[in-house]
Image 1: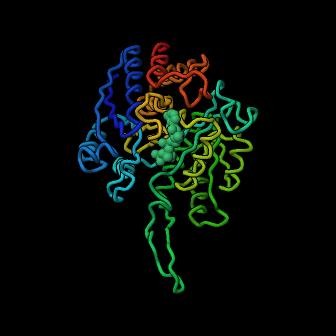
Image 2: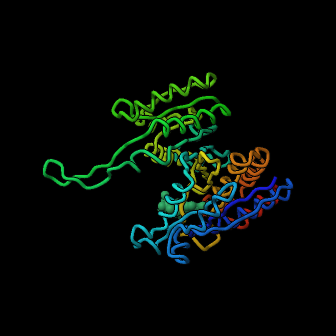
Image 3: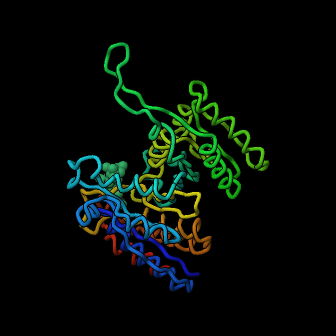
Length: 355
Ligand code: ATP
Ligand code: MG
């Protein structure tokens, strides 16, 4: 199979974890006789330094001409005092808009060998395997107006929670599609007892559910969902929710598995060009030391193989290799609890050796 992959390393450990992930992908390429073309683009602080903008047009072009995008991470203290338009994070928001990435997927799976890393008890998390599907381009974060106002003669502020029917429908359809390939259960999270957008959301979820008779739909209020994630995480298969609820719940859910360095994500576009990135950021505190855990980035690449290229077997081989290395007890510093640890590059080498 021939595929072009756009690589946006970004800043800090983003560069380090993407570099070794490319090595791992080359091992997959060789083992399975595929041809991957890698095209590099600048984004974030690195792009600001080299071109004066966090998202150069050339980067957008490189992405649009590719079959999938892999992104490291953006940001760092160097650019923290930049004016808003020249913040590295603008690059990330920009590429989401440019590629119309409307659904963010975060799989939450516990690793057998990491059951004691979680803040939660083993018996609660052993066997957790669900996916959070967060709406990414609408809702409160993008609604207008969003500004300071005067209310009853006093200073106030307003944000707007707004959704179109089509925006809600496409994210819910994505969730049902995913559930139909999994354990066939969708939990739609809202606040329908208070919000009109949530009542529309529920209505549309019910309509979509009619097209998937073998998938069960349940509705859950967001406050209850926050509680259930801690109390009974095993009950979930696919969780679908709007932008802000998803932002909060997916960070909460990420703590179930333990380390930020383990968590991949995918952002899906209706054009079929999807973007994959680790959940963690650029981690300036450990950047440049070859100690970052590259697993989240490597598992993001596995998601790319599965969702963008339909290479289920290759994705599985990669995920199994990650698991085997974990089982063998070899860990990067974030998981080593002060004991012996291996470097970013060494971990990738161990994974490659198994492929
Ligand atoms: P952002 O705002 O970009 O999301 P953040 O402030 O949330 O960034 P991260 O960069 O995600 O922070 O890092 C949070 C903490 O987790 C830091 O102490 C960092 O060193 C650690 N960390 C994050 N990713 C990894 C990784 N892959 N390996 C090891 N430690 C990591
Ligand atoms: Mg963060």
